[in-house]
Amino acid sequence: MTAKEIFGQIRKKKSFLCTGLDSDIGKLPECMLSEPDPVYSFNKAIIDATVDCTVAYKPNLAFYESNGEKGWLSLRKTVEYVRKNYPDVFLIADAKRGDIGNTSEMYAKTFFETLDFDAVTLSPYMGKDTVEPFLNFSGKWSVLLALTSNLSANDFQYMDDGKGNYLFERVLEISKGWGNIDNTMYVVGATKTEMLARIRTVVPDHFLLVPGIGTQGGSLEDVVKYGMNSICGLLVNSSRAILYADKTEKFADAAANEAIKIQQQMCKYVLSVISLANVETLTTNL
Image 1: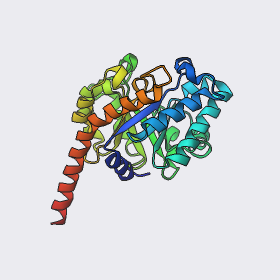
Image 2: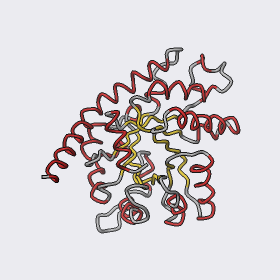
Image 3: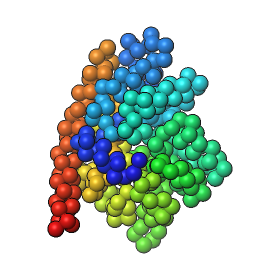
């Protein structure tokens, strides 16, 4: 899937919502616990309820790996369900991998061949050879951590080189040459919107995966103001606000309502991008 094809889905759904499937078995509605595979059944219900508003789903691997073999089975079944029923949806493995080259080759096979994800989140801090094996898969994406929203991001990511440039900017500048806008995107926390303008000066055309709206308090308006580009260029993630909007048997309806609220906020921004894109196309053709 190319950047323009992702934008095609954004145009179609009038949304750039990524729904995070951080499905914690300890937080599932009680009605799900009698299911043979509670996490998979919960995911399936959430996906069916939100897919009209969702461009991408992002399972966080920690919530599956912590359940051992059962968790991996839930994850595999979730991916297979999306592939079979909603093949145009973009699937991101939130795995945050990053290791030496031959190990990265195995991780790349895991997520792109064995599990058939479209993308995987990666830490670029060990350098190019840790990311390159993922970039060798045609049509697949590497989602590199650029600027994260956790408090300890200040420990390293904001280190100044003495010339007013932060370490995360150096990471962006170097890593953008490893791939291209059709196989590389960056994670930028929604609580770091004051830095989005600086990030866009380095990577103006890349997609950004932006977690942190909703429960974490990030502002969608600010993310759009500083982060949107000519093909939107944003996948904004919401997890807990959608997944756990209700703890009763009506949890899927509540999740759908929450996704619709976000989609309705996003719609006006998507329409403005579409309008501008159409104007630019018309002008080019004159």
